[in-house]
Length: 127
Image 1 (tube, rainbow, N blue to C red):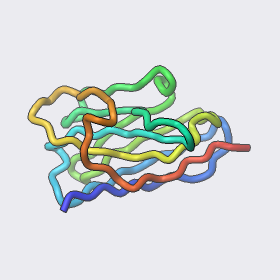
Image 2 (cartoon, rainbow, N blue to C red; image 1 turned 45 degrees about the vertical axis):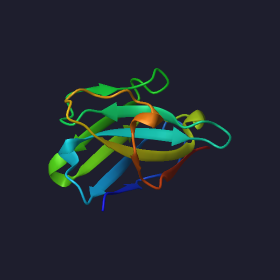
Image 3 (cartoon, rainbow, N blue to C red; image 1 turned 180 degrees about the vertical axis):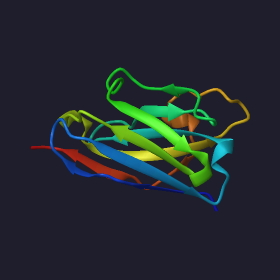
């Protein structure tokens, strides 16, 4: 059974850093593109980063570009999201999601593209 489990969330001060992890089980991670998404109360879920099967291609929206870095270790079946210089507006529940692909390209980083989701981890940025 395909399962994704996020970890690494917490409370951090503005300007601080966190590294989120997405551990996959029940499937071979290198067959899947992975995305990180977030959803704040009352807002739609948005993509914050996506990565191709091999990790050679990534995408970021302007809101996190230069601050967030996605990476993957297929041998460990884990994808990471390094978040630096965090801002209060980054406060959200963060989810990872998977999509099995034949293509080696990074897919469109949109919610409807991914069909397997974790339960999320809360990130709160506050002083």
